[in-house]
Length: 565
Image 1 (cartoon, one colour):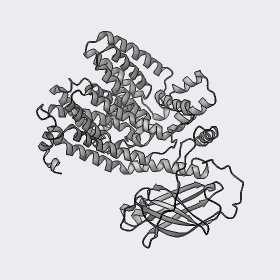
Image 2: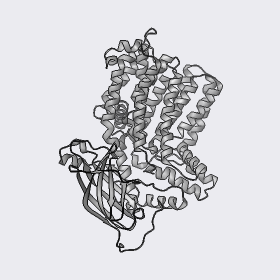
Image 3: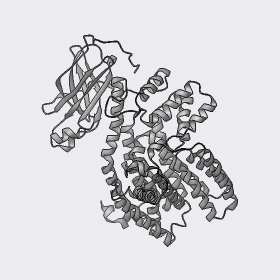
Image 4: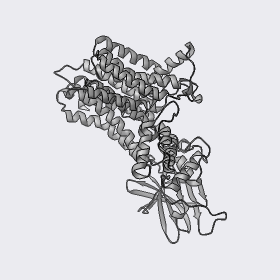
């Protein structure tokens, strides 16, 4: 607190390792969120881009079909690079693991930041840029990318490839220009807005009057874009309109929304105003001359703004004014680099960290507020994925709950069954057997089971449990199955129960809900009374409910295939 009240002291006596420590705080927090939310679950687009592709490879697809599938158009994108990652996983291991894919996707944005920091030049510049990038990018405003490999594998990767291409162009050598062209080509075949790097790179080469390299760059761009546009067609469901004054106004409004949404904390009604503020800041920096001298920061800003423009054109009608979390990383990157250049103007050589020290409270406040604002949407997103997977495990069929693994009827069923038979991928266990905790009976716990279903293949329970005076934390509820012969315990998946929290007028009980689905053969045949445990840091309390799971008598009906998990 003393340091925050006296930034001058912070700037004079702050060695680089302390600034590095401060920059790591947002990364560590987000890393914890990623680890907690990580599941080996194929969800939504991953069923098409990963599972379907690997099934075709396993079925013996020839090289022509393989190339066609790698370069296939999907929602105006050709996601070749992410498909190659999935294919590489299959060729190396015979399977795909979305824990690993998610880790790779998040590593892309870390790599993008490291490239920018390395290209910044001097140590003070690197520290200033690193701190700003850490607080403006590593927050839950980008939750969709951080928590879902289906987003990060593309949206973080395209940023890294574009940043790498621009940084290589700034080095002004023949080899670096060739490397930049390779990365630009990969960016083009990651997401459609990756093609913007060709325009930005051409502008950089033209300003530097590197005409011979510009000619080669243009030839490479023509080749990459020619391949990309071959057979190109827009998804009719995205309602991309023809150019007109009305559509141009909607496009401009949505583009400003995309630019300003980080500092509006997702509030799209006021986001365009922040977009205007950003453009004013950018104009000021250009007028004062500081931005024009930035050989990497300025082109990356232009790439981010151009990419947001392409996204706005393709999604303005379809999105209905809303902004998907996966796009916010581009806005955050543009803001971070503009604020970095502003700090450069205010940082005299004698006191290189003074302006950074004065701005640190604002950076911390932004990061904290963004985490606070997007915590609930992030939890809902993770819960939606988990509940869809639980329902599939329960019924061995998709679409039996409010959330689906895939929007198309029967699509997930067919793909997941075939993938399991071939040994390529199978939905994992989500609830694990544990040693029964050393719990004490509770006189105060409030507990209720509102779902108790036993089918031929699965046992499912749901409900809520909470302790008066304590906040409900994710992962603290466990289920006991107690019979005359044994006691078994399992972990559960936390679900938000805002209805319960509202009924009890206790907002801290938002995460009091739970769901458990286990395959029936994992519980020995017996009759079990159901108990609920709240395990808080090794201090466990339990109550036995009036609910029973009776397995001793056979359940009538046709036998079903048991999963192997």
